[in-house]
Length: 429
Image (tube, rainbow, N blue to C red; front, side, top):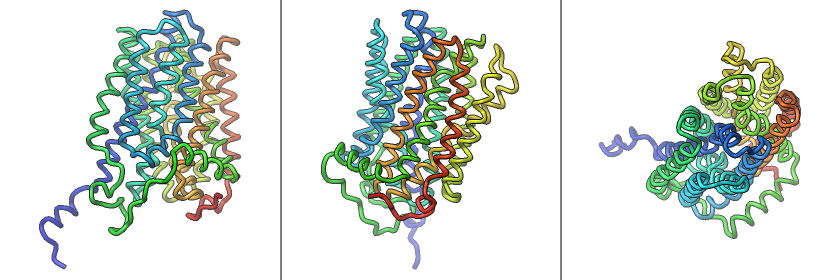
């Protein structure tokens, strides 16, 4: 068959799925930046209002928990009402929550703005959003796309953390909060105009799908009902509890502990907050490489093996971290930053792959619940580490505890049934 000039141009043109993934990446980068802000605000809020680190950590903890608990409902809402509507509304919530913080004068207002509003908003753009985009728009390269979108979280941290630390230190924390609010509003038009819910909306199919692939109809019934039904079915399987337990520890050892408390912990040892924020941003550079590589590996290697390796390596690095803090950046700390960055969210692609293999079409919603456990673990770690610092005057026990928990996560990953990780047949329900 002879191809026309239009056919040849169409073949050379990138598939529409890549443009959708790019817009999703922009939103995820922004969400990561919004979530990174509390880490650089703990010191300024402590100084201005006299709130304890445990009190401020409580607002961060609620933010982290809602960020996770919102995810499965957001995934179901995206199935019911569309990705574009849900993500646009989420960005507006972030803008309102961050903007209102400049008016607060009591700790409960911090909980309301950063804990509740920003928690709900960023939760709708959590990793379940990445899984939904990958499942709808990609058949080929799905693991790689999940890895790239997950790495967007690290990219957002890389972009926003040094800027927000500079603004908070030189212009005041209110300027930093207003910057986050403005950034959220700026992304809304991009999402609304360029993001599409299904390949069929633009006359195409998912990348790698046959040309006659049918469009999946929106699930009937309420989104909340579906999310709860999927949870009830998944909770009857051992795989769910092993995945959720391991991912809770993943959240505790990353978002809850390192992302929230690394900067104030380094500052306790005499390191300037902007320097510590730069180190945390450096984690983001190596996280991009580690997560994309993990996505590539998840298409080729048993995901259970990847999880076991990631958790053991992370636990070992946390056990040595207390000895690395200094008033200056020593070479051993740089080695830790590189190593920890490669492992930061490398756990996400294999976890998404396992949810998809075990739970089939409900895999995105199941991952939303697994991710909720991630954020519950993060919230508990954020509060626990803050209280540890208030009681003992240092974070040492928090680092050691997280390292030991990572060893438990490796054991839980090993106990996921082998057929779940290697078979495309759903085994839940």
